[in-house]
Amino acid sequence: MHINLSSAGNEVHAIWKDNLGSNNGNNLRYKWDDQNPIAPQNPQLSANPGNNKIRISWTRNNEADISFYEVWRKVAELGGVWQNIGTTTNNYFVDNEYLYAPAAGDFTITYKVRAKDIGNKYSDFSVGVTTRGEYIGKDVTEVNMKEFRLNDNYPNPFNPSTKISWQSPVSGWQTLKVYDVLGNEVATLVDEFREAGNYEVEFQSAVGNRQLASGIYFYRIAIYSDKLQVGEFVQTKKMILAK
Image 1: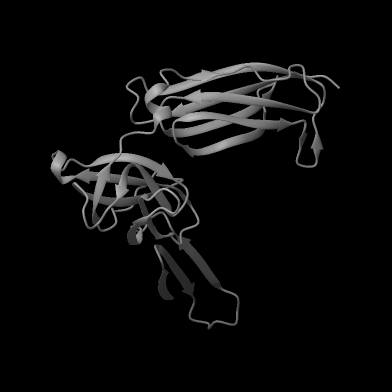
Image 2 (image 1 turned 90 degrees about the vertical axis):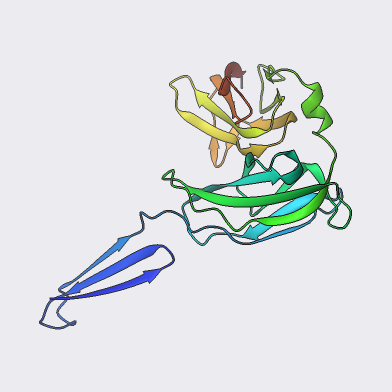
């Protein structure tokens, strides 16, 4: 028996072949990719177009099972402690607390990024990238808002569409999903990292190529942030589709 090994990225391929040759069909192929993701490559800092906030970007991982990226920051003048400042599914992230000022900024700021896959495995961190920055504070909406809130959809009952709005006082990963009375998921309206703020989406009774039947449905918001000491905010409300 002959065994040939090869690799691509973090995948390992093995081919077993018996001694009768390669034309008899007695080959067995096996692929194992249960590895941690590769650390994000080529991190770079720049001024975000339009507002000059610090933007970190990197080369997107080749692995197909990446769930999201975590962005960490430390400020030398504030003790140099690493902090997780957010997650994103994009290959860039904008720091809303600091302006890009490499020549004259008051603070020395370093960023690094790591990837997480759907199997909850983390990559190593990318190399750190450093610049000078000017502190501008948190977004006004994040400072002023004091509570989470999921509003009643309007109109309700509805046909063919209704609007769902909510408020989050912190940045975090947000999901908004719709379920039928049996608990089956009907639609995912939001599933991403968002900054603190007020949001609104429209829900249509036509989901893909399927028309929903009249009846009771539920919409559920879930928000999680490392800034929360209580963990998650989850709330569910009822709406009625009346045709």
